[in-house]
Image (cartoon, rainbow, N blue to C red):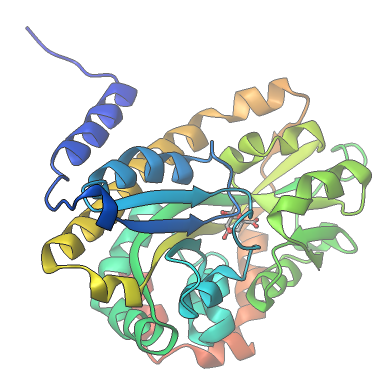
Length: 336
Ligand code: KDO
């Protein structure tokens, strides 16, 4: 008999397997640590679900995992500093946020550099990342445990396609595009040809519904999770950034863990990232028809025109001058 698991069942069994193998170290209830994680994502975001369903039970022997969703613990962009100051244990951090402290991280936030989810993982696990990780650990007191897949960012606008059809970067001229509030994000918005407006993720739905901005960029699973399809009319499949987040962990807390507990935390982070990645990829591949059924048109622009324009903007930028010699070439070599 051929025993066939559906893809969803396979991911669920993988999660269960990780959890079952995770109970390595345990402590009595009263000396359990607390791992608070700050994220702007919702409770139903795949990264949040993976952390709650995989990471939390794997560390439960010695730590209580306490997530704060929707920016309730710390506002978007302030989490790394909170960890650094000893006010927070964990966050879901972006390369763009790290670039605020270490400009060279902008290489991982640059349009059309990462090719897909597997490429992100190869880059994160390659020796090229070691000096990046070490610097964050030494100078910020933050350990980057694992890389999470957020997805391909697409341009999502309030205007109908009849009102504005976007084929090339020139068509985005004057479009007030919300981008998250750091220099690297704003630069990407400009590189796309738009007029970027900085804004925290938690404000975006309201800004779209009132018309304070013309659009935003995020992967399809986020468009659905945050219900942006209710307040926008088109998605332009620019795929300008295969976006990632890092599971960031306090170095001070890490140093208090026993070697066994450290191994468990590392495994739990890797397992949560792996399960979240599979689920996010599945969502990304299957959500277009639901979004279209909500009255949002989805179409491809001239992606080569966007790629060329974006890459040209970065070539002579101050960001590119902060990238260590040879790293871009090494990242490209790890691609397809
Ligand atoms: C966003 O603000 O658009 C963004 O997608 C940026 C990501 O780096 C990440 O912070 C994400 O928001 C939040 O986790 C909410 O999904």
